[in-house]
Amino acid sequence: MARRGSSFGFLGRFGRSEDLRRLDAALRVADLHPALVPEGVKLALVNVLKDHFGDEPPESAYGPVAHLFGYCALGAGAYAHANGEAALAAATNRVDGALSRGAGVDAAVVLLAHHARMLQPDVVERHGIDVETD
Image (cartoon, helix red, strand yellow):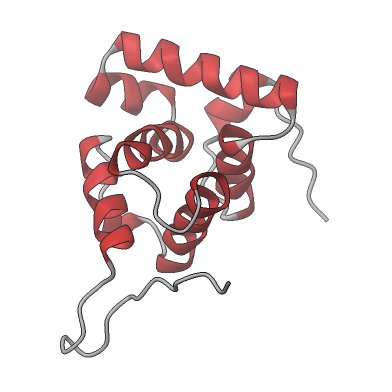
């Protein structure tokens, strides 16, 4: 069965798909404005969720992914300022766990942040992430 596609909308006549609207809302809660995240990256984040949860991820799945991506994109200082020290500790633990496992949703989010060139240098340094480039 083919995966139901996400939609960015078109010329204001066709609306964004529900999954992209949920991700935009979750990014705002994590204090990362959706306009700062390229549409292709948001589509990839939604696809990470669909790969893990199926074609209709639960609404509760968007928040944790947005927060982890927000930590990667904002960096530790800005993320902690917006979300608090407890959220920072949770995000750093998730990145450490993702790096040790090397697979899963969290690992896919960190890898996506790296490939999108949105992984902040302080996150790279804090976690010892190898970001060799050609």
